[in-house]
Amino acid sequence: MVPLGWIGGVVGLVFATAISLYANALIAMLHEYGGTRHIRYRDLAGYIYGRKAYALTWTLQYVNLFMINAGYIILAGSALKAVYVLFRDDDQMKLPYFIAIAGFVCAMFAICIPHLSALGIWLGFSTVFSLVYIVIALVLSLKDGIKSPARDYSIPGTSTSKIFTSIGASANLVFAYNTGMLPEIQATIRQPVVKNMMKALYFQFTVGVLPLYLVTFAGYWAYGSSTETYLMNNVNGPVWVKAMANVTAFLQSVIALHIFASPMYEYLDTKHGIKGSALAFKNLSFRILVRGGYLTLNTFVSALLPFLGDFMSLTGAISTFPLTFILANHMYLGANMNKLTSVQKLWHWINIWFFGIMSVAATIASLRLIASDSKTYHFFADL
Image (cartoon, rainbow, N blue to C red; front, side, top):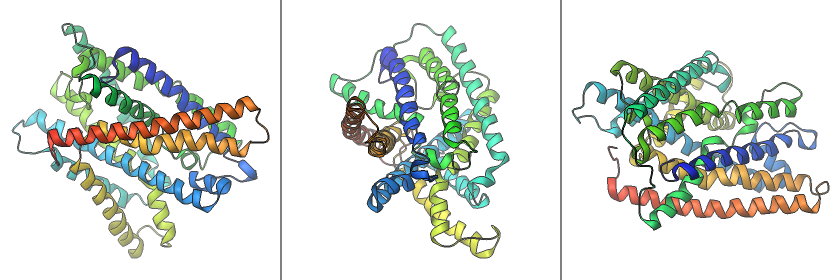
């Protein structure tokens, strides 16, 4: 909202919702292409295009998931720092320290939860944590907005910087709605598979986006162009309420990270033949070394460049656009070449070229933002 303003932000969010629903629907309709269930996105790409496409898709997925994980670690660290500042604003503990703590907790959680289906009750906790944060952020933002004087909603920066930040924000918008792993998430859905996937998508992109809209619009309305990337840094209210919101944001980030890291864990477990009891010495040692090492690298990158908004923009540019929009349209076009009319084919080619151009432009804009922020704040910045 800050780099786009009211009109651009509202239109952008609604448009991103619509195109994300459309792109994911294309992927869902290909889930049983060729009479085979494709429970991994890379399997679907490999089935349609061949082995090289399988490897390319997996690379894009890996980049996407790595960047998502980095974003969650930054978010978790920011939440921990916000708790610390509520009780001891002495500037002794810097953001990179909290990011390191968050990374350690994420690693411990990854070691204790051997596979995605073992999350079980943690998914229920995740929902509760999300709802607590949403309610507190919404109520405190509305309370501040009612009491505050007139806010400045102008888009900050020079004419040139506004162009780059707007393009970067477009990647941020699509990143907010997409994971690049729809087949993996829906791998255990019951029959009829495609029909139930479509029901889930319609629910997610209608009812599911309402909390996102509420918090985003309320936060921007309350604080205007001074709204920070992490909203809880802006709000005013009882210390215990703000602490509760920050703690739930931290815990939710730990659980959510595990979901998006699971495809990498599953790939490594399968490649190295990890089977049997999760508590077996070999399996436990493997999780400690491999998952711990993976998250150590993730944490280092997060602490090195703790610019959450920039990470979201870059992730959207280099992986979300290609995975969710370019590849989905091209796969659907290739799979249904003999069934589509000339107009339908043209429509998919327009989508492919448009999102291809957007991906290149957003990548340049995001790298420029990261370079600019790195000069302003330096590596391992305390934001």
